Amino acid sequence: VFFSFGPIKTATALGGGVAILRSAQSNAADDTTCNAALKAKSKTEIADAMRRTQNAFLSQQSNYSYCIRILKCFAVHLVSHSRLLCGAMKSFLGKIGMNYD
Image (cartoon, rainbow, N blue to C red; front, side, top):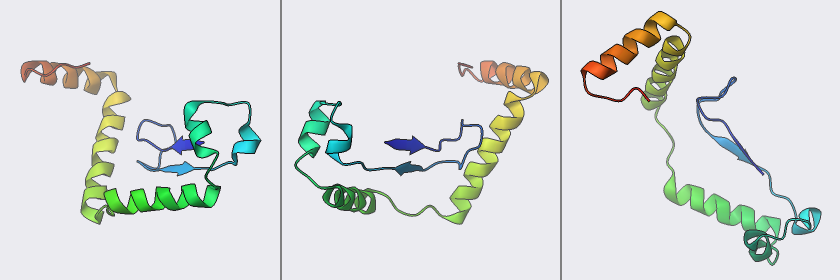
């Protein structure tokens, strides 16, 4: 099970997630191809593989880039909660040739 914390959620952490690993026996009703491939591995092996993948591809975000992300999310939040600002943003995006949707 994977819980995501993206910026569009009500109470967001502005990115990230939590993965919960269950044994294959506890979810025997789900016989998908992915589940069948994972039955041979233990939760520890899967967790170790997930950690290796995370460490290989991801690096820690700097404080500066996180502050920029917070400011962007704050701006989107302000615009989305005001009809006036939303209309102004739609007009602005149209004038510079960007699609509002």
